[in-house]
Structures are given as C-alpha cells and as structure tokens.
Length: 101
Image 1 (cartoon, helix red, strand yellow):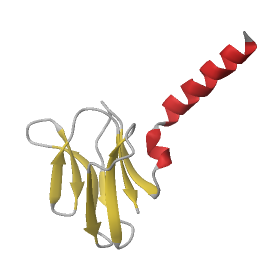
Image 2 (image 1 turned 90 degrees about the vertical axis):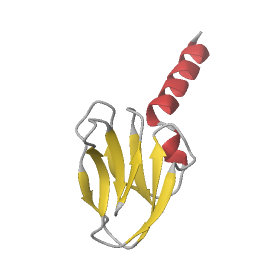
Image 3 (image 1 turned 120 degrees about the vertical axis):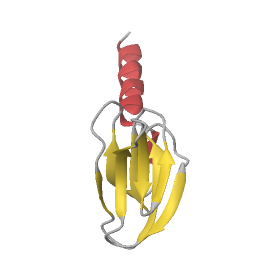
C-alpha cells in the first residue's frame, strides 16, 4: 500500500513538472493557458526553441539577436501567438515555454 502511494506521488510529480525539463537549455519565457501573454526580449544572441510544456520536441527554433522580441502576445483575432523576432507562430491555448539552447 505504501509503495503504491509513493508510486502515485512520483508519477504526479513527473506530470506536474512536465517533459520540458528533460530538454536542454534555459527557460527564458513562459505562457500558461488562460494567463496574460508577455513579450520581452532575447537576453543574448543564440538559438531559441518553443516547446509545449509536456513535449520534448520543439515546435519551432529560431536564431535571434540580443534584444529581438521573444515571448507571447494576443493576436488581433484574440488568440495567443508565440513571437520570436519578426516571426509569429499560432499556438493552441495551453502552456508553452521558450528555451535558449
């Protein structure tokens, strides 16, 4: 019984953390479904990859320069889009992160 409880807690912890922790890189921007979308700037030159929180394969990857736009914003349609420099990617209303590789 005790081992079953521990196994359940371990699985719950893994799901709460998400598979994005398995990917390499540093998280630099995050969007959570239903929350405010924020556009910031790339902190350094380099490659930035967009991940769904529970996926280890990037949706897209872009090379950016320090100061390029990076984050998430509401489009004119009201939907959220991921922004990287002059690129915009339509995303579903779920959680995403940008990671610097």
